[in-house]
Image (cartoon, rainbow, N blue to C red; front, top):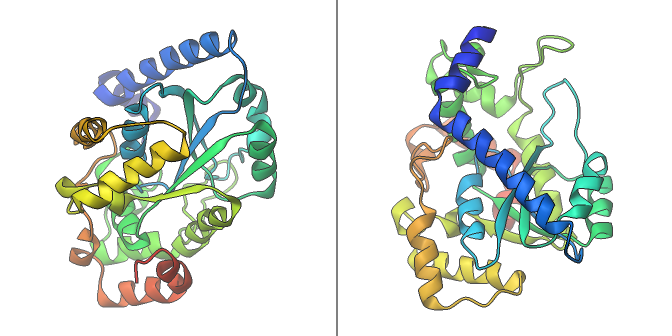
Length: 286
C-alpha cells in the first residue's frame, strides 16, 4: 500500500484516529498520576495476536481501579527491529498496578527477568491456534494495512491459510512482510505458562455471545480479579460481561468459538493438531 493510502487510512479510519488520540491521553494521565504515588509493580496484559486482545483489555479495564496506561508493545519482529522490555524499563518502572500495559510478547528470558525485577503481575491470554490462524487470514485479506495483505489477498482461501500456517519469508532487509510458522510463535507464547503468569483463555472469556458458557466467563473474570487482589460482586461481574463484547473493535471479526471448522481443510487441521499436539492437549483444545 502506498504512503498516501496509509495517511488516508489514518485520517479517515475512525478507529485508528480515535484510538491513537486515546492512547496518548492515557499515557499522559497514567505517567502523571504514577509519578506522585508509590511504585509497587505494574500489570502486564500479554496476548497472542488475534487471540482476543481487546476483549481482555475491556474486561480488565472494567475492574474497579484499573485503567489502560496507553502503552502497548509488540514483540513480534517484522524484520525491522526487535523489541524487548529492557528498552522500556524506565517507562515500566514508573507505572503501578492501577495501569496495565498491553503486549504481544513471546517468551524471552530477559523479559522474564525484567518483569520479576519490576514486580509486575502478568496475565497471559491464549486461544485455540486453529482459530488464530483463521482470524489472522481474514484480517490480512480484509484490511489493506495488514502487512500480509498484498501477498495473500489474490490467492484462494486454502492457499492463503497455508501461508498463515506455514509462514511466509520476508522480502529482504527492511522490507519484511512475512509471518513465522504458527507452531513457532504459538509455542513461544506458551513458554510463559511455567513462569507464574495468570493464564486465561479466549474461549472462557467470550461468554454466551461468542458461543461460550456463562459460568466459565464468570469464573474467568472472578479469577482475574482474585489474581489482582480486587474484590468484585456478582453484580460487578454482570456489568463487566455486559460491556466486554465489543463488535466495534478494530480487529473484531466474529468473536465466535470454533468457527475455524468452517474454513480449515481436513489436511490443515491435521497439520496443526500434529505440530502443536502437546500445546493443544495442555490447554485442553484436544
